[in-house]
Length: 290
Image (cartoon, rainbow, N blue to C red; front, side, top):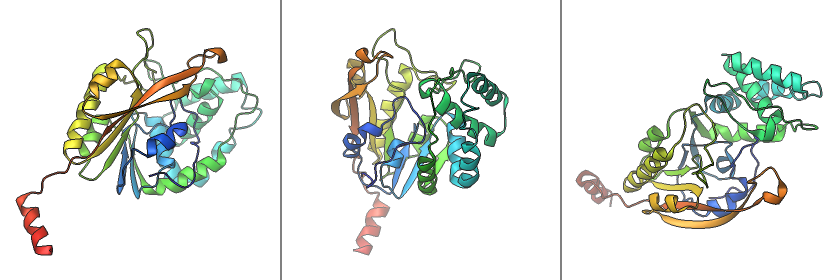
């Protein structure tokens, strides 16, 4: 269900799905509700056209920003704009704002600074240390882009969405017959030396990867369609063996050096919704209506 307008997210985001929208949208069936347990920057949300969305992420700062954009977008955008100046695009200013962010417990202040840090930090990374402190270094960009148009577009579409910050398991288990779930979890490492991004204090290990696949199978049996994206590896093919698998080559920056950039195989695991048998009570109702 591709939307008419292809829109970019207002956040920089590692592993964002903007370039995969044409390939991915063909695997997302029609429904009233799209559920995303790992919404990230929201490219799939922004580029599909469902009546309702349930958007979840374990990153509380991300969801806090989204919720404020839904309800107070005018003030959020106006105040955030003031953080994008030549004076704030200095290493010392960045480090001061990062410290302010890490010390703050005010949701509005954290939301503004989260956007600032995302656009001024190195490579748009979102990384926390074991103490839960944001620790991405200064990005040294000539003039960080203030995504005003993208913020307004997100705020407008957010009126169709409900946001939550909880674990993926709860979100998956709450899905009902007819719903569609798209999962974009932290990807399985391509090598033994690679590691998962410290995107939140809670990690996402191989047990979580397998559990997500199990929950997808359970949801499928309840009449819920599920699509999961991940790296195409022997291990992911094993855990997704109950799904229909679609592999594609994706341009990916696997190194800071341009010469080391290349294509990486990605996988869409598609769990098509099973027809849920009618209960005797529902069958009787159908007969009466007929």
